[in-house]
Image (cartoon, rainbow, N blue to C red; front, side):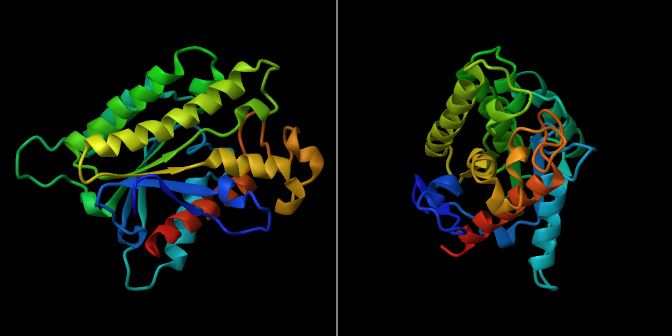
Length: 270
């Protein structure tokens, strides 16, 4: 797939659908189809691990494994996400925990514990960084790549990455009237794509996809009835969309999981 191309989700009838659901994939000749992936490793926050609901990851695993043939590899996951985490302060701790279990590949010629061709590394951080109103967004996105992707690329020979952008937390029940949160989210998501494109130019045999959960959630909030929600759910805690003042319900995570699976399956068909 050429640099800067994307896959659109064709569900629905609105003209802007392709702009709202897409996976940007940037590569330079290296790409494994998703069917080849047997392991995913997740780094993140409460968007990926939250006891009060069933997050996207658990639902995604069920969807993928139910769809795979009996003789094909089942997808397994290692989840290092921790509620409340930020890329700025907590990504290094998650990386250390990962390397404690899967030691760094320090000897030339040795194979890493996880097969790079069969492993997808997922990073979904930034929600708390953007909501906190502190710290330079560009610098923190840089931390995501320097302390995240670079470490995995160097020490685990990681080559397949999936980055998930931040949702529109400025529209959550917990959001203040400050215009800073939407602006920070917008800047984060823009920089995430820009850095992904530049990263693959600088690191050979690397593929990075960026999945826009921001578009998914925005569409739900703009068109709740099309997803089975009520208008009142858009801003209500404890409703169909918002589990509390910030977190999504299991039903919303189900939509995220389905959209992500469809996007990754579409890459297989190219």
